[in-house]
Length: 167
Image 1 (spheres, helix red, strand yellow):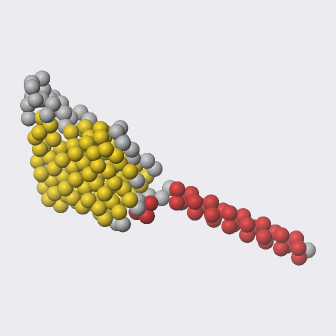
Image 2 (image 1 turned 120 degrees about the horizontal axis):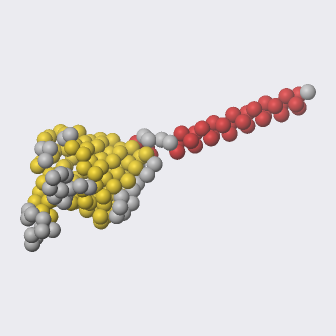
Image 3 (image 1 turned 90 degrees about the horizontal axis):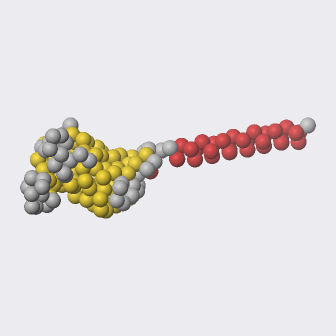
């Protein structure tokens, strides 16, 4: 009788321990808190989808760079457009500063293959202002990875052409 009772207690304790371990592993796999976002970095050149938008669709390239480690980081993004109209010599030279975003990151969360970076920035050109809150949602990888920047009420959906985003 005592052996049967001891066996039951051990089986129940084993089930509880295995269940607790499984729950802990699932919670870590689905975590989106800063501890999962230990190091996030990226730099490169991107193309803004749709450029300046209708009706002219002037192409826009960006040079971007960001890093997050140990609860702090920075973000830079320079948007360039051609100074010459499409179809004319030099129209493929991205030589005019349309917008510059420079700021500090205040949080980062990894969500599967994406990371969400938040902070405040100084913005010049389009959407100019100081202490402007921004969100940058990035996917990991090299060319073809994405960066979506939301700042000053504007949203820029970008495709990485050169460089890498890693976390």
